[in-house]
Image (tube, rainbow, N blue to C red; front, top):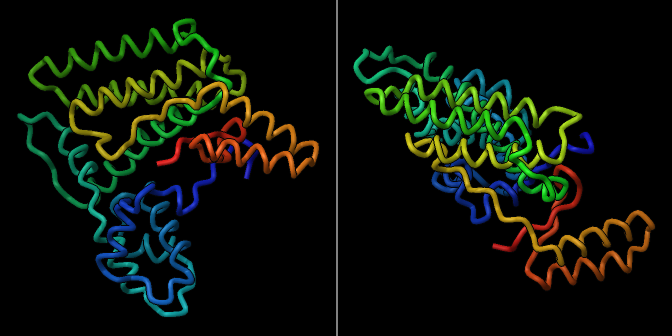
Length: 273
């Protein structure tokens, strides 16, 4: 794992257990002893993120976790029961409503893969929104700011042109491409980072017009400066191996209503839910 990679545990999958995989697990009573279930659920969620409509072969190839209670059949059924309604909507929108739609499982899987690219761009932009390094940036000084605004206009023009959702989708992918370009750039400036966060919000707004990203949560507001200062002091204490001081600062942050998480750019504080 790289220093800038984000690690999501089962606690971070959903704040209240409402992730589609968790709901399917409960509905089908998948857990028995429960020993392996955290890993099983995370593996299933990871598979569905990249392959929203997997085949039996996809599941067998990717879910390699060992279950000593032998609930493999229920695991497979639960994964197949996770219906991604947004992927179906995305697929239907990819063809103009006046044109016939070729409906088959292969095309639906391709749509799921394509939609995952938009979701990935959303996820990247949300991490930049949490990045303290972007807090002091001015998004308007980045080229992405103007590009995002221009693509938003093109998206709206396409929708006004006899509800041309297929063309509007293309503009969403253009915006996602620009977000990924700067998000992955090693030399991105603080203004670029702020622009990535802002562009992600634009992508969310435009996608929601056609019913996409309904299950995506809006990026959280950054923690106040007082909390961020405590986080920085705690990081410094940990570097100096002053564990007692680090624990004291952690408790102070918790008392203010924030949890600590390792994310892009270092330790981040998120408000308790």
